[in-house]
Image (spheres, rainbow, N blue to C red):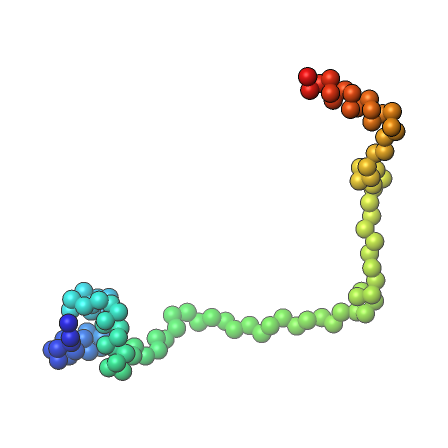
Length: 109
């Protein structure tokens, strides 16, 4: 399906009136992509819309110079005694391990 001169003229008029490509496509019976393609080939553009809001442009925050002492100093992680004891595995004697194993066998049936 090609574009007639009448359709192209109506397309230009509707585009100049401010209608969207989807609205024009519904009116002419073409797809939106076909309308966008014809607008591109015809060299029609909307132009730039004025901004609706006036954003305040702020300068980027100034970075404070870092002191060399702060960069060099390391902080050791403090660990409480209870936490340190929990992290280390408890050691069992051979006799205790055999007793735990025997109890496990009795419990499993």
